[in-house]
Length: 63
Image (cartoon, rainbow, N blue to C red):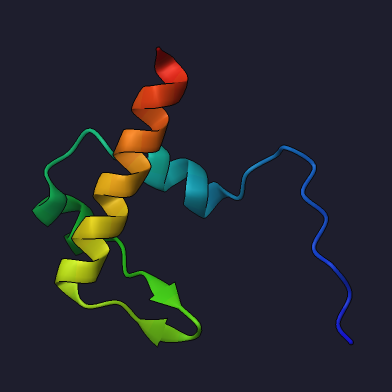
């Protein structure tokens, strides 16, 4: 059994960089980032859906 990852509220630089760039068009984000899930690269359509999810969740938090 692998040890658990401790989430202490701090974000990795990768995640901070992604969040800082979520205001950009999806095409720009896709040129900067690749997304993986279960060690499989997401397709561009899947990546765009994930980006939309992140934007939506962050918009909810900002309200």
